[in-house]
Length: 329
Length: 282
Image (cartoon, rainbow over all chains, first blue to last red; front, side):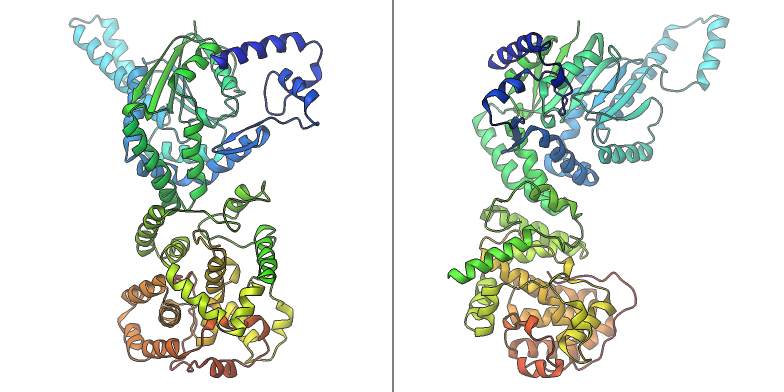
């Protein structure tokens, strides 16, 4: 695929010019390889910035992150209401499906990138908690004649946390407003054990290597300026054997459904944004950014290029949303 | 119309280089800078214009109507309702303005009423009873500012968008001319006046539904004296949008009322001491 060749070429150039141009390594946009930029510089009239898409507009790369930040800052308070209104509540089923495919065991460490208001992390904690309870019940059932040691242990365990100590969910988001809303929701819904909130950029995660068992990014990766960068960071922070999971809007293959979906997206969603949140343009950006995101196969190849194995995708709702999954080995 | 296009550009540049920017109410003013910081060019006919097709307009009209009814403090929804339903009435208003020499000069020069365009020190030095002084008193007593009017977004004609904007900005002057405060009763009275004057569907809707929120005694006074007076004045008066208020600050208020054929108010209403007030205009 063209994307993978570009990536390989860029990596090759990077290695070859690394020695020559160390000064350019401190990238403003966080891009690890500035080789392409230095070559561009020879041909352009001195403007360093490449441009990228922001919805259907073209903007300088350095600006996209800031504009996305402002979009989410303004929609943060009404984010959950709008999600329910726009998807008619179906987004909850999509997220449940992600958890179902993930099937996390108690004691798993999750990194929920672009986690914002915490939907995935809350579901993760619920899932592992109920899984743990079920395991405990089955353990009790099979244990018909417990020894005195076992009985003593079970008395101690009654006082312990219902969450297994190792079960951790870290919500990481670049936007402080979204995290604020997420924290308030966590308080009101009673999630506290095993949950942390971290401000961080998906292209440059503030975590060490080999930290997490599962990395998820739900409806966030299309807002990232350099998707390959985010994928490489995901590979870095996952433990060997860790799983990468991405829930994102994708291409609808059925032509009739696609027409209906387009009509709904462009006619109804900005109107809903204006009426409910008072913000037409943020939701116009939302539907445009969905159209600019690569389709299922292209994204699968991008994930493979980043170094993941056994990459597969599952279409939900006829391709409106796709779950991509890959493993680090 | 070469001259008008020059002034149209000036109007647009006041919108773009908006240093005297006020609150948007529901939206933070940072909202404005996200979308206009980069561009000298903008999508649409004027800054802030969002082109919409008839389907979107219909959906907006219905949605904003429902939300505005449920929560009258959503000023932006009242504004959107006015913009999406007011096309024919705006055309009528614009034609009335064109046929009047003063109105025509307004359409050409495109004056804006904002705190930065008003010469506040000069206006406060005017004698009591003059339009400028009474207007400032009104703003102070009711604790409102002309900067809180939302910009027009969904009108697909640049001149009509200005007429809509002018209507919004002149609303406080209506209050001054009619002597009505910004409490619910005063707003409903002004709404009746505006409905008779402009014929905007949003005004008619507000005029019809506003009384439902009034207490019995206020409803009584509305129905017996204020309401008929407002309707009479509205239908008899000259087009209030065709008046170049910015050149008439020194004029005596009573004199202006006579000139415009507006009867003096039958009841003296005082401003309520507490904010906030429901805004039925926009």
